[in-house]
Structures are given as C-alpha cells and as structure tokens.
Length: 118
Image 1: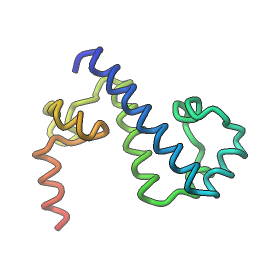
Image 2 (image 1 turned 120 degrees about the vertical axis):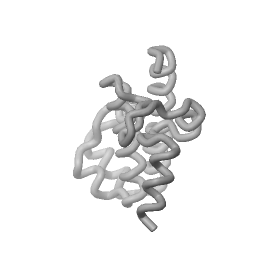
Image 3 (image 1 turned 45 degrees about the vertical axis):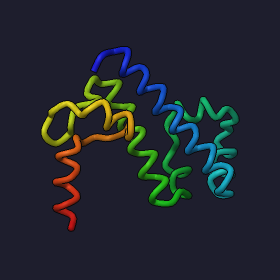
Image 4 (image 1 turned 30 degrees about the vertical axis):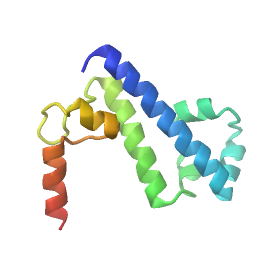
C-alpha cells in the first residue's frame, strides 16, 4: 500500500470510529455517562485516543467488536502492515478495503474462515 492510500484509509477509519462513538453516545446512556466521567468533550479527541476498559464495559459485544476492528486497522496502518492479509500475507484488494476498511483478511481467507465456522 502506498503512503497516500494509507493516509486516506487512516482518515476514513478515524471518521468511522468517530461516527460509531457519536452514535453510541446518542443511543447509550451508560456510555454517555462513562464518557462524561472521563471529561472527554471533544469527539475528535475521543476518537483519536484509546478509551479505557471501564468505558468499554458498557458497550455491547457488537459495538466493542467494531471498535476493536477499527483500532486494529489503525494500528496496522501505523506499523506498516495495513492491507496485508493476517492469514496468508497476500495483499488485500483495494476494493475489499474500500468496502471494509478494517478488513484483516483477504476475501479468500475470509471465505475459508467462514466455511470453517459452519
């Protein structure tokens, strides 16, 4: 992946994280209270910072999983492994990354994983 593409995807992932957090704050009273306890008023700051475990405890599994996937993708961008399949180490297609920016597996490995779960 080129640096420009990685930078674009980093911004896209940060925006996804911010949108998810905004929705959680508006929909989940416990999450809103936990965020207010941290004194985080600026959503952009909150979206770019780690959220402590206590705050994440109030989230449902689906929301926590989504945040974890986004955070993992941001980490892969930072360490230079973004776009490389975590299973086979082949490049993940740009089309797949555009559709699912936090994808850690190429489509072939994802399909294998889903078949194995059945």
